[in-house]
Length: 493
Ligand code: SAH
Ligand code: SF4
Ligand code: F3S
Image (tube, rainbow, N blue to C red; front, side, top):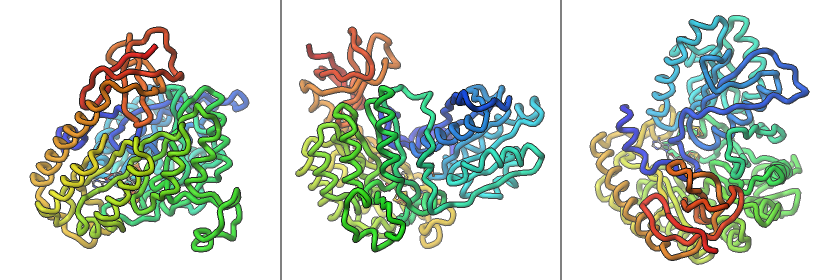
């Protein structure tokens, strides 16, 4: 698929840091701990896909730094080039294959340089990756990163090295992710891995394995440490954060765990949110992603109770039509989704709501598509990630249904929802003009270095003149104008 189509596919450029598969090709550096002896080798890592993949790259960098590697942001200098890959749509994979070609020169110039692929596409293709892309030396799936130093050694001795074992336990709980490329203000904390839902279109359960929650105490410790380092916002990450459930009792599994009484040894998502909110009143807490079938009123009440839990819910609808939702195996219907939206509006009235939508899923008719449009009209999302359906090998949909909506119809429907969304976000932003928001200042605006940017609790980006304000502090900003993507304002004295 062409880059052009890809650009069409993405509704809004990344201005916020919610999970966004459109991020691509970013690299990061890591400092080797002083206690670790250098092995004289440099690694380069490039990340694609969702925020969870980016968070994993921080874990990988930490593991490699601990093994004596130094890092570089120039792949030409690297002894080890890693691509942390995404498999969510076909064009995500095509982008990786295309990128791999760029590394040929390095391998020619530098004897012994290795290329490794990590992440979801590595897990999906397994050994096949080595056959299909000769340039690849190492294939490591998302649960195999602790074995990377061994895999590198193996590959260094001339053999191809593969570890794509998925785990039921791995959460990398105690590995301190490196955060050197961050803005020092906002950070992501993975609270769980994997996914037990089987949405018919989705490759994630196959690439990330079974759902498992991370020990809540390690999550709180990470949040505290970030706060002490000056961070003022954490986003708790998981494919389905509402099903977070951690027990220190190893005998509590499955149904028993679901039925267990909550206390410090059994913690659900609402309680985890509260614990993170209590780390410090000026540490903002966000989370992503909520699944409509699991999002409870308890979570919403917790959001309402704490000022520092941001009033923003990412609630992917995928389709507004109950029949399509059933085919997608989303396990909720239109009425259920609407009832969840009503709960948000009732319990957290100031909350902004965002979504993901897939256009042109198998057999989708024009009327069914119109149900998605009417859902958008009803909710008026402040942010939406919209995609054309892309069949993924091995998924339920690929096995059961025909990918029969013609490409041009998918694209036309996508364009229609993108246009509608733009109107909604502009409308919503216009309603904010004249209001004052508490903004966490994240950095200097990319367009104008005399301006700062930050976000309000609703996750909207606001830019405003710098004055003598500092990043990492809060300011009350009066919104004076807007575009469909950004609010523009000035600080209230
Ligand atoms: N766990 C999240 C979504 C993770 S994937 C959830 O349940 O909502 C992010 C988004 O990619 C999905 O919400 C969906 O809109 C989109 N997506 C996933 N598989 C896709 C496919 N095969 N084709 C097109 N879009 C897809
Ligand atoms: Fe994929 Fe569904 Fe799991 Fe989200 S909840 S990761 S869409 S299977
Ligand atoms: Fe994320 Fe892409 Fe994997 S969206 S979970 S990196 S398939």
